[in-house]
Image (cartoon, rainbow, N blue to C red; front, top):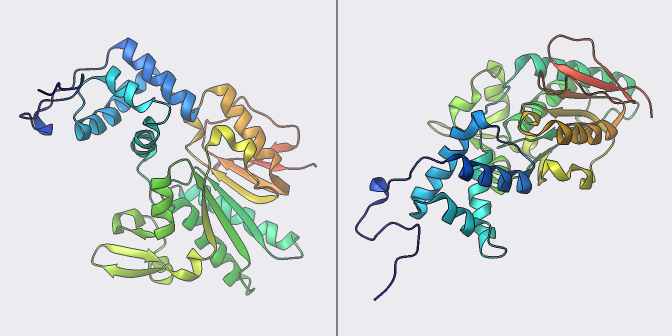
Length: 295
């Protein structure tokens, strides 16, 4: 006679019928501490429902109905690693699209244009931090390519996208997207930079894909990244998920990795009380940005 493991549903109960109770405050604190230790990201109390929703979807797939038991499973030193990687994708995937913030992208374009005028080697190094499934990284690549066409120079640029999730990075490398992700793109870019594979499926063209690479990187460990001397670092709507102290540490690392004259663009409100001795704030209302002004 087999014994049903604690926290699992019985064989005669479907996953759709599985009832998962609301997460109490103690369970929320346990999960919040676990995720913050792993990722560095912080779930304030007002985001309890977002954390609970992500966990509930995965628990239904596995047949778990107890938050404590699932935490025990996913935090196991060796056995839990595979499950953590699956859960990680559920926790970090957010809705995104190409050219998501047109104002910030416009500023990025001006920054890159200014950099090209001042650089004798006429090349650009771009870092897309927290790139998710690649839409942001490719949008920056489209801007770079358009800029080199405008000044009638051979395109010499590279965009590096980093994220903590293997799942979203795989999507970025594959570079196949639904049409709804392309809402907001300049109309001409759809034919210039995409190949239509199916009725609702488009792939970024190879000449652009060759100039964009993706790497796994936990932002809490950004000090371990070898990336340096960047003309533009684009990091929007990611830092809000970190506690203030860790957010400042990440920003300091990013600022140190700019080339002289390079610019860091972040989301509005993500660094209101932060400053860096080598950077000054860019006087532009389109986005919150800082330029490196001294070595």
